[in-house]
Length: 162
Image (cartoon, rainbow, N blue to C red):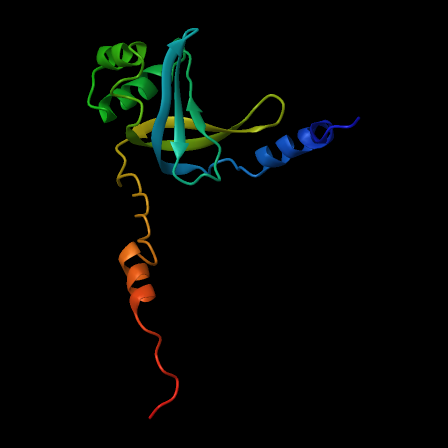
């Protein structure tokens, strides 16, 4: 006996490829982001950035602590967040309090990977010029309970003009 869920397995791989293909790499230049995650592990600082426009992939700033660019990237992030390097490290190691959810701007530049893929890299961090976009306010109800009760209690209008 065939189950409807058996049929779902046949097209799952194509669906996953299509969903990933809908996103695009963010362009070079300065962009505002929200910090989604931050951690220090395996000799790397890893900061995940989310752009307000959902069509872009998330960007990761993940320089190794031994790289020449590490001091510039980590130092610029600490300055933007109003911290020293030690405070930034402690905040990240404590679970990201004071870092995750904060708004920053970053200079993005592109690089090509060894397999030919395009990567968005963070050059340095800056103050975000604008606050996060406000969520749209909830639409008021079309008819409130009072309006519904009023409509029911009114006598119907006479169509014949006398």
